[in-house]
Image (cartoon, rainbow, N blue to C red; front, top):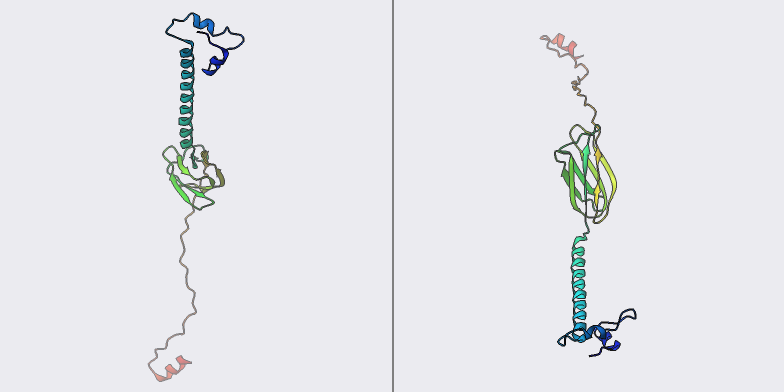
Length: 191
């Protein structure tokens, strides 16, 4: 059986000028295998590869589609001026566009994390016992990102306790009451 260039190109094998014609390969094959069946096998394996690649690309694109989210997260550490962590600090993250507030408390390591936040500008407020209130505004969170906001809280000044002194009322002295028994003394008291 002789294979021409035209028939080889129809089955998916295009002979190149640098390689010997396919007929030389078919002469050494047993009678049960023809060049057509070899071409069919080659084209079948190529089409299987193409189907597999297309299937793999579809699965990957679906997976990436689910991985893309419209939310982000904000996390960080709350520390004091010496670098020690501040546990149990109350954190408020306020979306400046919607005024939605997300509350969180730091763990024993001074760490907090707020996931699934819509993108936008956020104001972070930190309050902890013994520390001044910390505020950081205009923090931009983009979709599918993780924003790290750390806070260095300053110690609050010692509170002075003042005893409130009672205010004394200074009033005009009331006129003396007259309790005289005689009518003569009563008239002098009234005047």
